[in-house]
Amino acid sequence: MRRSSWTVACCKVEEISGCLMTTITLLGTGLLGAAIGQRLLDVGCTLNVWNRNPTRCAGLVQAGAQQLNLPGEGLDSSSVVITVLRDGPVTAEIIGSLGPLAGRCIVPMGTMGISESVSLAEQVRLQGGSYLEAPVLGSRPEALKGSLLVMAGGEQDVFEAQLPLLRQLASEPRLMGAVGTGAASKLALNQLIASLTHGYSLALRLVQASGLDVDRFMEVLRPSALYAPTVDKKLERMMSHHYGDPNFSTSLLRKDLKLFLREARLAGVDASALDGLASLLERATGTDLDVGDYSALHELTDGR
Image (cartoon, rainbow, N blue to C red; front, side, top):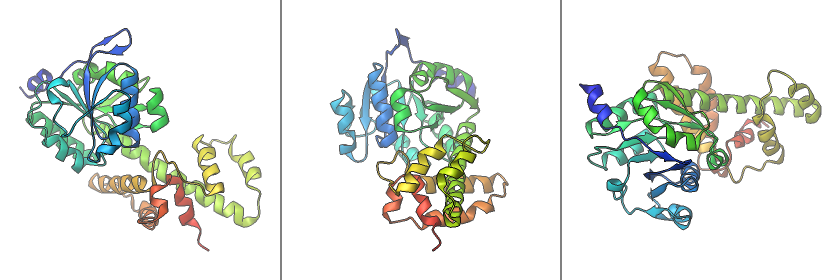
C-alpha cells in the first residue's frame, strides 16, 4: 500500500523537442541554485523561484523566472519542487511549510545527511508527495552547461519520471539506490574533496620548505596515478593566495565534513583521523577564508 501511495504522487516531467514542458519551483538561489535555475530557463522551463533573501532571485527574475514571496506560493502551478538549501534541517522546515503536496515531486539537490534525507522522504510521503534525493557533484560552471554529476536516491519509477528533468542538468543521471544512497555518495565525495585538498596543501608546504621548485615537483605528480585535474586548479589559487569568487566555500566544506563525520559515527565507521582536519577548518570561522574558495584551507597549514 505504501508503494502505491508513493507512486500515485509521482508526477512525470514531459519533454518535447529537447524542451521541458513543465513548471518547476526552485527553492534556494545561492551559487549552485541560481546556476541550476538559469539552466532550467535556458532549456525552456517555466520557473518559480524563492530565497529567504529576495535579492538573491534578481538575476533569475531578469532572465524570466517568477519570484515567489513565500515558498509555497507557486505550488499549484508546479509539478516539481527542487530545493538547493543549506542543509537538511532547513530543507525539512521549508518543505514542511508547503503543506499538502499531492501530485508534486520533491527533489532536494543540496547536501544533507543520510538520516536527514530518509527522514525527509517520510515527511514528504506524509504530505502526499513523492521524493527523489538528487545531490550533485559540480558547481556553477557545470550547472550552467548541464554537466553536473547527479547521484539520485529513491524509487525506480520516481527516478524515471524525473529523468527528462535530470538529463537537462546532467548527461548521465545515476540512480544510486534507495533513499539515502545518493546522500551517502555526496558526503563520501565531499570528504574526498576535503582530504585531497588538505593532502595537496601539506605536500606543497613541504616541497616549498625544502627549497624544491614546485614546477619540478608537478612534473613528477602530473603523469602519476596520484594526479587529479583539480590539483592544478587549486595549485594556482594556493600559489597566488587568491581565493575570491568561489564556487564552493570553505564554510560549506567545513559543514559537509562535519556532516560526514556525524554520519560515519552513526554507521560505525572510525573516521577519527579526520577530526584534526575538521578542527583545522574551524580556524577559518569568522575570517575572510571562510567565504573564499575551499582551497583557502592552504592558509591554515602554514605552521610558521
